[in-house]
Image 1 (cartoon, one colour):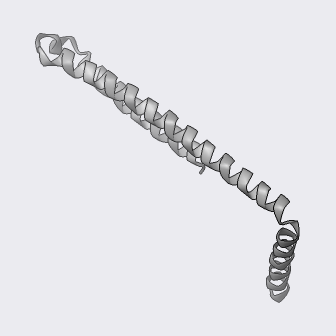
Image 2 (cartoon, one colour):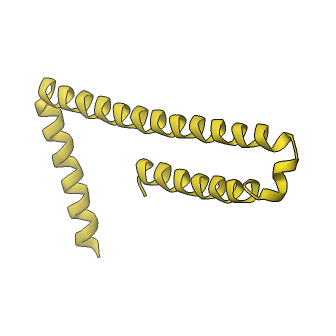
Image 3 (cartoon, one colour):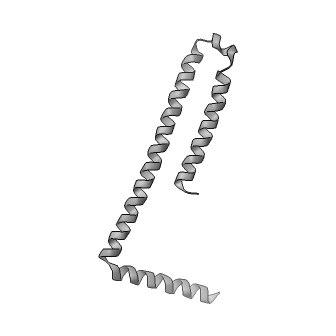
Length: 101
């Protein structure tokens, strides 16, 4: 499961919870309670903040992945023989392990 899948799943669960709470708070029987309007507004504000946080987290994760890919690309261009040697070593190790089976 990727980071964006986790964020999407968490956001979906949070929205379902908020929807359930909204349904509960939308009860006409509760309109007589003065604090319900304030509670409804706090719930909407909390959902808005959670959505913004999820979007920022996804954007940060994407930026970090892009930065890591760019750094790896730069290293591969700056040190091509080291990268080729490392790939050869990993390939030889994998071949050795598979040959032993």
